[in-house]
Length: 228
Length: 107
Image 1 (cartoon, one colour):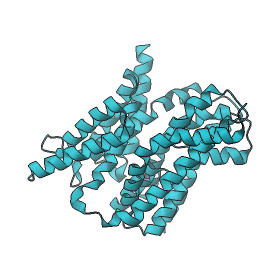
Image 2 (cartoon, chains in turn purple, brown):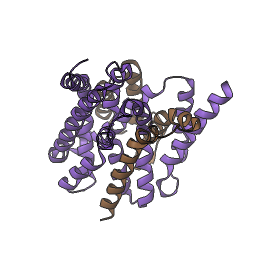
Image 3 (cartoon, chains in turn cyan, yellow):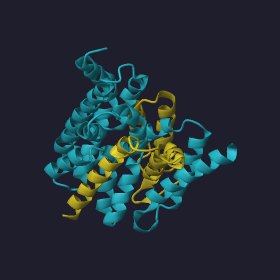
Image 4 (cartoon, chains in turn orange, cyan):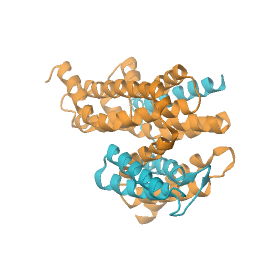
């Protein structure tokens, strides 16, 4: 049985290599925040509250287009639906913890912390302390993320527009999207979601993202059932 | 003010999503239909997010090779597929975009 401290440190170490991808994404998120003319300090507080770069970027982009508040809310939330999968996957290992610890670990759920920790956690060799591994990677991710968003917010304003840096946002999402296509079923879901997203681009109240996401999920489920 | 309300709702909503199954699973089994649907969430949502953003120039969609973002996006997608590396994907896409903008400024 390892001591709790070494389990925590193992979690920290598991996340460190991923920081190479985290820091640029954080910087870009920070730059996006100020492009929407949100005051820097407000933008940073929003990042602390939401702790999700993708949702924050989409919400702020939609706010600048003047989309209705409910549409902004649901569009950003549908992006974070993926955290439900992580929640379901981590739940068995957090089962015996207090509600306070569960809440803290839940808040720390991110693509990166989940990816860095899940293999170790699912081995579950030391059930009493395994959660500390996730705590280690989660906190490391949180600190690195907020620092890079902060730098992006407070420094990014001075970067020239001709660099087309806003294009790094779809590229970052692209880098996250491609590995989610694991078989022909998830491939079908992605294909339908992509096509519908283009067709629904002009949908009223900017509802295209929500419609396309639901279409993709449905297509994947139907194709999977049909193939079996 | 509205912006703050949206952000507070988003913070709370995101937290509830994150804690959802951590609380639910300790009480009872979750419907298998929901578990099946959840499997398709990342591929669907992220693709629906990415494709229009890559194709959009000046607030409208351009599906044509005269759109340098489409070419940059295809190259970056190939790099993402081969390497699964976020940083390499961003760099390759940006470099292709910059090169195209320098070589063919009228695009």
